[in-house]
Image 1 (cartoon, rainbow, N blue to C red):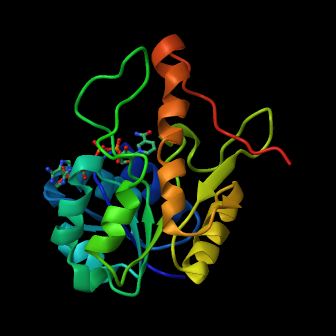
Image 2: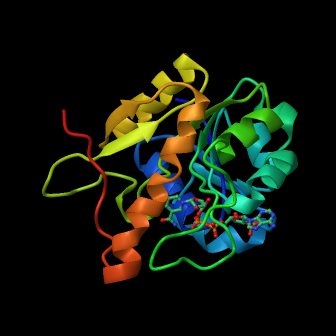
Image 3: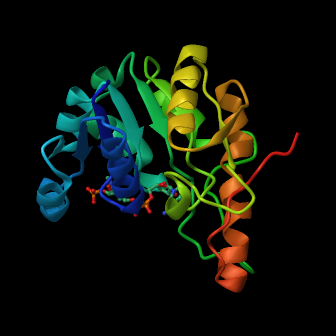
Amino acid sequence: MKRIAVLGSGVVGQVLADGFLAHGYDVIRGTREPAKLSDWLAAAGARAATGTFAEAARAGELIVLAVKGDAAESVVDLAGVDSLAGKVVIDTTNPIAAEPPVHGVLRFFTTPDESLMERLQRRAPAARFVKAFSCVGNGCMVSPQLPGGPPTMFLCGNDPSARAEVRAILEQFGWDTEDLGEAEAARAIEPLCILWCIPGFRRNSWGHALKLLR
Ligand SMILES: NC(=O)c1ccc[n+]([C@@H]2O[C@H](COP(=O)([O-])OP(=O)(O)OC[C@H]3O[C@@H](n4cnc5c(N)ncnc54)[C@H](OP(=O)(O)O)[C@@H]3O)[C@@H](O)[C@H]2O)c1
């Protein structure tokens, strides 16, 4: 099994790192300040490690990018474009702007014709980015249990074999998947985060996920 590098000290990084550990993978988490993950490291067991973004990216065979959207490009630089080359990078990020939501509707710093993942792909052209996990709250990312059955995770990225690999991981984590093709589809997937958040902001209801009915 590949060693997973999870870049991110936030809740998404934690949930996905724990999910990969639970499924038998070795995990290294990256952050600018590894000391802040010492409690997690102590609890996570012998297959877990921590390091800087650069150390984690070097050690990981598959990368999960779980950092603040407006810092994602600089984290790609800190991780090291050479360390990402050839590797699958699961991009969980959303381009959420600093301005507050309007009536529960988040604002993005991207435009409808350019997603954050396309920017990241241009920044690290040899990395194999796949958008996934971006359109659901962290509480549902691993083994989602919903009365309506397995929800759908929408994914995209330029490399078909990278998409297939991420699809297999999503299925292992309990997801139905919908492969939407090349990176431009992230222009549609990233805004699903805006949709997903509206019931949360309006009714404090966060326990849902999206499903594509066929
Ligand atoms: N929260 C959710 O339920 C959820 C669901 C779906 C998608 N997402 C997306 O997943 C990503 C992670 O979300 P999150 O809630 O776990 O955490 P977050 O607070 O959005 O991000 C935390 C991470 O961003 C890094 N970061 C912040 N500012 C930085 C800067 N100026 N330079 C370098 N790194 C910086 C932090 O680095 P350090 O470790 O060095 O502090 C940390 O690792 C976001 O893009 C979010 O939109 C979140």
